[in-house]
Structures are given as structure tokens and as C-alpha cells.
Length: 180
Length: 438
Image 1 (cartoon, each protein chain N blue to C red):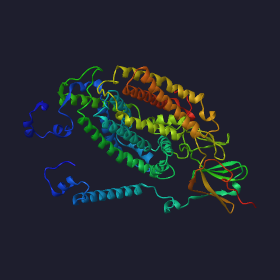
Image 2 (image 1 turned 135 degrees about the vertical axis):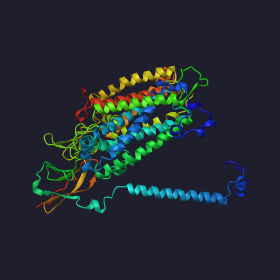
Image 3 (image 1 turned 45 degrees about the vertical axis):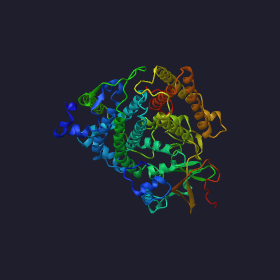
Image 4 (image 1 turned 180 degrees about the horizontal axis):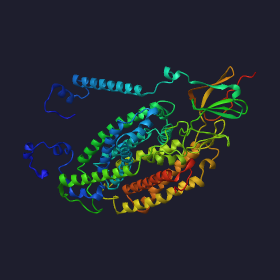
């Protein structure tokens, strides 16, 4: 502390015994704490203002479930693009359904399905994925993300509300229509 | 002459806005040698002029632009076709934005190589780099606004990179995007950042930057390596410095105008979220990062960028034995090491790029390993070994001091970075494959 020319009783005391809490130093600490609390409040306010709407809120809840079509419309071994939900509905050779996000997992470009080569080919950085979404060629590091598929009354539906990341394709992921 | 007016006369002087307000942050006299054009190349002043051009042209554009995905593109078409000089104003904004990145980078190089980052100018180096980051952020956020294919996809891949930042990445991306992909929320965010947050921060930080220049006693005074500085000869700021600055400012404005008249800012097809163009490239000032992404796992590419940025900020605080402010390239040895570094990087970088494209494929060489190792840890370790080895060789071969060796590494990395940027901008075609630009 700088020695001040005007010697107030409080200052005198704090010079002799710095550990002692004077009224002045107590009030200073109080102000500092209150100021920090106010700052924290404003920060919290700003952050919560800027946070995007939560997935569970009313706005995003409405029609995230896209009815893709009748079960019979999708032949095994085909890929159907859905512009609206931005996903591919894949029917594997064994009849299982997969809804794949059309965003490349590398940097987010839209990957078109190339029927001739039976591959998803990213135009941006040449990543390639097979029909299950697995990576054939890097730079993409993980398979295409998936959406939940449900089959109700022979209608295939895809919930585009939540996208799932996965590290590789496994047999538990495709959804199979109930046997008749 | 104004500068020699005795202090006692000043209160009686007529209202003088130039002398009293606009110039209050300039010294009354400056060392004559700092006026030499080859000290500063006028780069700091150019940056100021370009920022002012940005503010004025941007303000005009704000009256024409609609920050909504369904109207953004049309509003630009209307601006270019319906407004008097609309296209010209947009071109001025475009060209001064791109030139600003170039000029600020060159300004940083000038300061570094003339020893302008030694005490008492260390903090101002940090402020300057922060300004560079803000300029880049302004450019990136402005890049999306035209809402054409170029804008949409370049921004998509730039934001795609965010996901690879550990811990906070996806969150950050969520906040920036405000949804699953670039849409109305992202455009709103970018518009707010581009037209309010970043300009305000830039102007505030610029004021701080100038104040620190003044606190440091002005610019470094250029001198030969062995020369000791006596008391420098001084000249009045007005008119000696101001006239030079005014001439420079007018030259810059004329240059931007000529560019804007000759070359139009690009406006392609309207954005189509379902169709990525091939190839999709980041804006040129981030093309170096994109080129790194071709060679490295994304997390490690970002790690390298973060390490480089940290190194750049930390440069002034490395405890150098000597602090030769005003000596170009620090010393005679410094000139030799810098030249050697530039030559080595100039040969090595294209070689590595070509080898990486046609000969060496780490992930194929180590098929059992996950990509994070084969494309991440292994090449990153190699890079660190190369830089450390280069530092040691410089210190050994040239008997270089720490300052000279650090400078050599800086040159090595800067040249490498410039060449990576050029590779991505000019030499990458469809599917990011190497090709000749002509």
C-alpha cells in the first residue's frame, strides 16, 4: 500500500497490523464481491440469451418426424434422398432401413449418392462412404450420422429431430420391418 | 508554422479542430529518421485508411442489405442493379476487406523484422495480433452475407472445423450456427457480429494500439546493425508526417477505387443447401488451414494452428539477450539465417505437399492404427521434430543467438504457411486434388 499523507486512524492501524480487518477494508471487499456478482449475472444473462433454442422447446418439436413413405416403396439395396429433412433413407440388401444424414462428417458439405459407384462421394474433400455410411476414403474420420427410423403400419418414418454420431456401422443400427 | 507556436499563444488561437482534437494523440515532433518510407512502407497508415473505407462503405451497404436467407441474395442483386453506384460501393467494401488482411499481415511482418516487438513495445505486438484476428473474424463473418453458393459452402466448412476443437467445439458450433446447419439463425448471428461487435472491437483496439505507439515514444528508429543511436533529429509532425500520411491515404483510396472499377466482387448462384460445389474452398486467408486439413487429422491441424497462434503472441516474451529495435533482421547473422530459412521452407513445403499427394500416405502405411494416430500424432511429431531440428541447426551452423534462431524459425513457418495458402488457392482442383492453375 502507498503511504498516504493524510493519516486517517484506519490507515494508521492497517499499517501496523495489516491482517486486521478494518471497516474500510471490509466494505471494499464487500463492494468487490457485489461487483463480481453483478458481473456474473450479466455474463449469465448474455450467455443464456445467445444460447440457441433447446431441442425440447415448442418451436423445434413440431413435425421433426418425417413420413418417408410406404414400406414397399423402398427396394432392397436402394438409396432415396429426402430434400426436406436432408437425409438419405437407405434400404440395405437384407431389408434393413437406415436414415443417414447427408452432411459429410468431415466439414459438413452435402454428400451426393453416386449410384454408379455405389458410394456417397463428398465433393469438397473427396471423402467416400459406403451404403451403410462407413468411411471408405478419408479425410472423414467417422461414418455418416444417423437418424432414428421407425416402421408403423407399413409406413416408414424418420425422426430428424436428433442426429446420432457413431464410430462405425454395426448390425444393431438398421431397423427391420416386422415379419408378416 | 503551427508546431512552433509558443505555448502561451495557444489559448488565443481560433477554434482549431485539427490541431486540438484530431491530432491530440500524435506527438508534436517526430524523429526525422522514422519518416523514411522504407521503415514502415506506410503499412500501418494504409490499414487505418482501409478500416475507414470499410466503415463507410459498410454503413452504406447496411441500408441496402436484408439479413434474412430468403431476401439476402435478392437484396444484393437489387443493390447492384438498382442503386446508384451500388455495385461500386460493394466492390469497395470487398476490395478493401481483402486488402486489409494483406496489409495487416505485411504490417506485422514489418514490425517483427524491424525489431518493433521488443520492450517497451511487447504489449503492442499482442494488441496488433488481436487486431489481425478481429480483421480475419470480420472478413469471415462478412463472407457469408451475400448468401450465394461460394459464401454458403465456404462458411459451412469453416464452421465444420469448429467441431474438432476439443471439449467446447460442438458447443461453439451450435452457438454460431443456432441450428443443425447454416440457416436464418446463423445469418442473424453473423450479421450482428459483422456489423456491430467486430467493428466496435476493432475501433476500440485500434485506439489502444495507437496509444501504445505513443507511449513507446513513437516508432523504432531505423539504424545499421552496429550503429549506436545518438539523440535523434526531430521534425514537426505537422506538416512533415501529416503530408506524407495524407499522400499515402490518397494513394490507397485511389488504388481501391481503381480495383473496384475494374474487378467486381463475386456474386454466384444463390445458396443451395442441398448442393455442395466441387471443390469447396475456404476464403483465401483460411486456405492455409484447409491445406493442413488435407495432410493432417482435423484435431491435429487445429492443434498446429493453435500452437502457431500462441507462438506468435508469445514471441516478444522469450527473454532475448539483445533487443536490437530498429535493426532490420536483428543483425548481419540474422539476415543470413532468415534468408536460409526462407530458402529451406520455399523448397521443403512444395516438396512435402507433392509427396503427400502422390507418394506418402500415412494411413495406408499404418493400416492397423486409427486415423488420429496415423494422420494425427505421427505427422505432427514429424513436424515438431523438423522445426526443433531446424532451430538447432540454425543455432549451430550460424552461431545464431536465440533471437536470430527464433527469427529463422518464424521465417521458416511464415514462408511455409504462405506456400500452403497458395497451394490451396491455386493448385487444388476438383476433389482437392493437385493440378496446375493454368
